[in-house]
Image 1 (cartoon, rainbow, N blue to C red):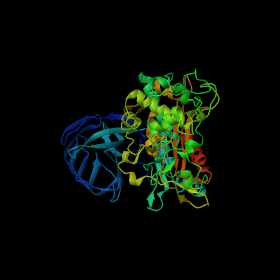
Image 2 (image 1 turned 120 degrees about the horizontal axis):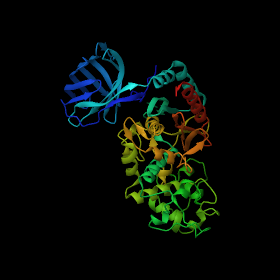
Image 3 (image 1 turned 135 degrees about the horizontal axis):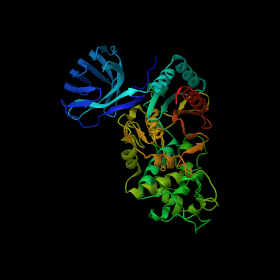
Image 4 (image 1 turned 90 degrees about the horizontal axis):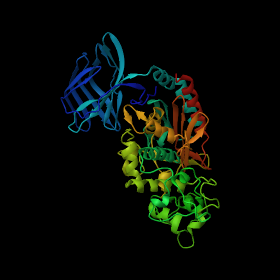
Length: 516
């Protein structure tokens, strides 16, 4: 049977020890005290000669072998109390963000049996120390078991095949917990790489929802606000020519009411990674050859300046605005979202990549999330993207575009689920707070409109699309139950009906079994 992600988060925090540990140091916790006699990792094998705990748990002569992205159990004796841990040869454990995720173990404390999860943090000297111990949430455990059932696994695989999807990954969360995450199908057919819950892929406009979290954090901390006028931050002036007296604010960009219009110039800004002068949509035959002739820059900051303020020869910036005044109408604008990220980054004195990594990705352990290939330690495992113009899946050429903050983020289902679980938990995940509760309320639009999320009755959500990309994140506000679905295949029109089918299927199970 396919396994849950080993660090699926379906444990309520019981004891969290996050202090740097030197080899041989002792750590106290409610479940006992542990000392590491000897643990070494040489890049291929992790060898734990002996570990003893005060509650009689021990690891004796354990050897784990590193295999691509996981540790494989090879030999040794695991036990906790009088109970052996079932670890047969070949059993696998994940190493996530430097943390070895061990399976559930059973310990006896005060005559009571407890199931726990134990995460071991890899130290610079090659030793390990306890990073996280937790006790299980019964409702989340029940939901995880349902999602792991053969019937659900079969249904999801049937949906993948019925909609001609090459690969999909998905996750389910409850407040502060990633209950389940898994991949189905292939991330890359040519290289025979399976899709997993940890496979990074482009997430389209769900990138805006992630950007919204950083904006809400910035607004809550002060120094910048939704009412900040963009011209008070930008080194050039952006003026809607149809209402020159009305200042454009960040709120206008967030609400898509600035008047900016993407148009053909935005579409033509997509270019091939291997041939930067070749427009992507021309190369794939989706628009006629020769359509894209404009000389706009591929550099993000310069492109935004040319598009919104200075224009280029034969392409005045005024042509990129609608006729309504800021705040008086609405048109979805990807360029507007990229401009919001630019304004925010300038106000913070950092590149948007660095802001996102330092304030969100690193604190949450989102190790498979970033804007560029250089952001990943295992980018060779990233998903290819496909379309099915003739009914059969064809790999799309790698593409890029200058307004990357509006849709160019790459992430995995598991990483996005960690973010969603934190938001469902009031801004906190396993003791790490990324956003205050008032910040979450601001993000989700309790007082004003949401910040790059969409409200729909009891749900807050965002969907994304790009060539070869169909993505969805949704959260039931009151119950804190959410779903993430990422799909790496679209049809000739750029659509993917499987997205809604899988989201509705998983959401139905989660709302039924979530126990909230």
